[in-house]
Amino acid sequence: MSNTLNATRLPEGVAGRTAKADPAALQALASKAGAAPVDGASRRGPFRPEVWLNARQKHGSRLSVHYFRTVDVLAVIAVTLACGWAVSPDNLMALEIARAAPMILGAVVVLGLMKSLGLYQFDRQSSLTLHLVALTGVVATASVLALGLGGLLRGPALELEAIGVWAGATLLTVAVLHALWSGLVAHWRDTGALTPNIVVVGATRHAERLIKDALKRRDINVLGVFDDRLARNPDSVEGVPVLGAAEALLNHKITPYVDRIVLAIDPEAQARVRELTARLQTLPNEVTLLVDPQGEEERTAALTKLARAPLASLNAADADRRAFHKRLQDIVIGGLGLIAVSPVIAICALAVKLDSPGPVFFRQRRHGFNQEAIVVWKFRSMRQETSDATASRQVTADDDRITKVGKFLRKTSLDELPQLLNVLTGEMSLVGPRPHAIGMKTGQVESALLVAEYAHRHRIKPGMTGWAAIKGSRGPLDSAHDVRRRVQLDVDYIERQSFWLDLWIMAVTLPVLLGDRSAVR
Image (cartoon, rainbow, N blue to C red; front, side, top):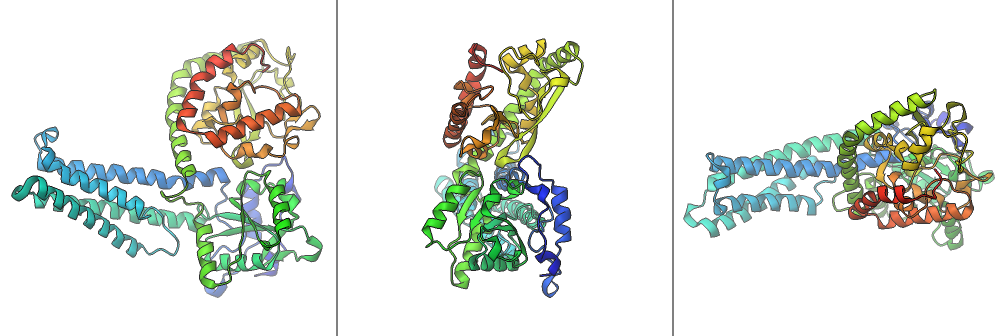
């Protein structure tokens, strides 16, 4: 690696708690840290993804496999309906079940086998040719089963030509779709959009081996190394900059861009592992202990598993499916909700404009998913000259900063209707922990410092309403007890979240908020 890269560190401004990490600035830094290609091969090298995506944006790309499978399902259904129509062009609905059943069975088998065989996951090392061969085998298996069922139901009257056309059309359709998908995933990986960003804690020999192997594979971005023994360690490890002590990671502004924190320390040092785990558990990022494999084959398998993390297969954890369903829920219900309340939004905007001078909307930087800084929209409810963008002073009863219209909007939570835009853009969800302003204080102390698990409420997107809101924890947090209760309710929701729980929370939100006469907002 070049000397320039070895000496590169993040600027001090990136590490502040309230500063927002700027992708353009990070990209500029990355370009300065450019490494010459090795053996003529073109690669980014450490700390140089071409596309800087925070965890929320990368999570959206990660869920794209579920959208792709939806396209697959619709395409196979369309082919099956088209073949059914070809068999009975006059009236598709009058098609005999005995004639339709074989193709329906074939479609179900194709979709089921593609999922169970992991054909929605494309690794950098995977061969597209072998993938297409597997698809051919899937369609062939489905065709044999369809022929068997057709023979049982139709006997000599079995329409071999219809099933043959269905099989050919289905294979052609899924092969084209999967080839396009493979190319798209390869492009995303090459630009860094689907390449996991990791930081390593511990400048050890385990870290050196991990970084060397990662650079050879080109499918993991190692953004930096953190180690408490700075005096004894070099400025970089295999060209990856040492960014500070492990404690610095807690407040580092690179954190929203990190998919995973890897502890590269000896697992036998149990006291050290427990200490670091306890310190890092306050972060919303996933923490992984690297058990350093000795063999080349074992190391390759471990890195392959790590590289796959950002691209969920359909056999992956239920959390990915829940996130996919939650995003669909936000788009459908949020979109319909925005249309339904648009007259109310217009009336509120007019009332704010007529009530006091200043802009209609108030924008505030708050914590989003994985502690990303997002801009949340609200109707302005305070006099313009007293607006508090940093929430250094929380609202109190009879707060003289609030306008007449603002008091009504806050009491009814109508001031939060513009956050439907945040929901549709993917920065927020309809249901989740309420987003707190960055640097919000309880008394004279920053609220995030009062509870060790505070950042755990950022493990999912913030919501317009949530479990804490309907349980009475809404509005200002006046004491450490209030902060602790809010965080506990938020974490309870994260661990229990489901589609039906979200629907119930949305259903009871309005009655609960309107019936709460004591809450200060």
